[in-house]
Image (cartoon, rainbow, N blue to C red; front, top):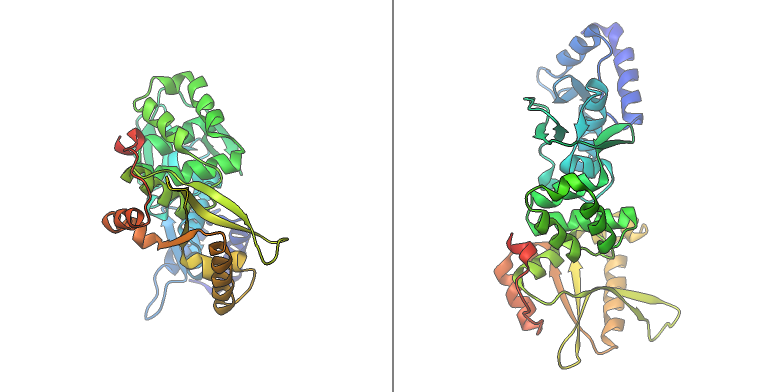
Length: 331
């Protein structure tokens, strides 16, 4: 690559990063220069090509999580293909909903005709309504909700739906009414399943991990807990504490469930800048105050939830009641 191109490429890549997108080369000359920078001898590539025809600085791309990478790629593809309408979990990410990273390996688009493309999975629909969010054309709110639910197991769809209700400031009943009012969706398969899942949604769930855990409880047939139960600190009455999950057992005793996650101790936004030792001390203090109410504390991790046999034994050991097997979980 000629050295005279380096300042121009650096400027273009910087502009793309500031805009939160991958770089769409403005000319064949720039495209070829970027393509050459994908290959190096005895070192790391200077740029990466996440999708055909779009580029990003390699070090910058490595710093992004899967949701951020999806957003960068989608914004660039929306420039390359202005007639595309993105759908399903891709549209959910654009809307800021919580989507499991495991679902972000592919991009999804929607059209009224069959189309083969390596850039995205194409879904065909007879009726397509869309809107533009952040400069990206995506399916309507109700269609995005329907697609995210209908194609997936409860453990993967409930975190998306819970976060959607938080973002949209909707109750489950209001979300169900949106789906019911959309005539094209009424004729689609798994319509009843989608309504069942929406009836189980709860915007009080604070993150995808908590939603996943609740979905596992429902799928295993255990009693659905109260979320974000609030307690007054008996030592410092001006202080409020919340438990992730709360069950009141038939004998009147209370079990509080706490989901442990690495992010809880390492994410600066969640720790308020405190180091891990301070966070752990605060957590132990909070737990000791919660037990003053007479409640028992049941702690578990995301890995515990994924081990369904272990998680079921844990819930039974704490006396959580088996109630039923949800239709939504069985579908």
